Length: 492
Image (cartoon, rainbow, N blue to C red; front, side, top):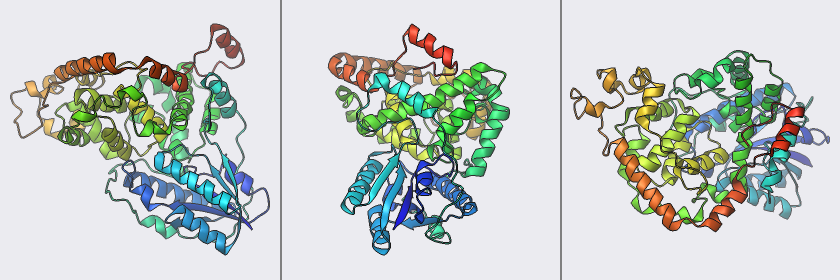
């Protein structure tokens, strides 16, 4: 009988409880990753994500080899593959991490649990984020999250007793089975080496400019941690990164505190999708489901999706994302808000488009953020960014716009954020917006305000607040907590 460690978004050996537990009971261990064609054909997955996963798996194979272990890659349906393995050699225990993904992965996991029960295979599932399955009391969630995130990381196993003596199926990673060709020309690299270099450079010097640079699409390339893809696919342990940050000595406490806050917020948002999986499919506030559905324009969506709206700062942000697979948080929010308000697009298709472009796509962060920016939660304020003033603030000289929209290189800087005012720009050189941003924002405010007044159900608002809203400490609680750890999250 064997142990089987099923890898999903946990492509590392340190602080990996399924691997740690499997290696501690003496049985031979099979470490398995399944390339699932159906998953890679979903509307929110893409080739650029697969490439990052491939690089990370190849890196993981090297790490396992140093421990005496091997990596097994198989392709197909997880149940069929588990059944074939089980018929060949009995699986005693299946170890894995809990995954908060889209509806497909959630239903896939339920199928695996049912298969294990039917075959009398012990199923051991562990959390790798401060995210709790089942009914969650949000009033107590923050303390539970902090306790878990500050619990001890598990060491790398000293030795793996492998079932197979060499890697198996690695060549299957050479075939991408999705139905898109959405690769990134200049992507962030996967794997532990790239992750560790990124972490070290951030802790050693880039964190010094964190708060100063994270809002600018240009400065954020270096000022942001850039750890998001390594956390999204578990190349790095969230708990380990947080604990390293707590122990970090930096000149600016504000930079450290701000980064810590975002690490805590990571689990806060993922918990939303875990508590309500339909967050990925319909408006979380039931009375807002139909707010935009009847007016979807495929033409407006396609222009937005490829960076051709005619609003330079929006288009430059989208084209950067298409090129690199990454853009900073503020610009992600602005892209989504622009599609929702200025273009009045229902959120599902824009959300899927952005998901496929993000190499660091994390469903539990993506969908709650998308709905927040789209105004479909019923508990958050309208976020209607002005793309002209945002561009003038974060790209005043137009260097960013010129880099990603070369067709505007001849436009004087004074007109670069509003090229429709420049008479020297020919109609076939750059798209003119169908509706000017200020006019589109005004129309959106009127529409959404009217819909809220007519359709917003207060009882449903209360349910959303109770289920998903963050909790703030009382003044007494804050003082008590601050005395024990000044670095705790300030944003809850």
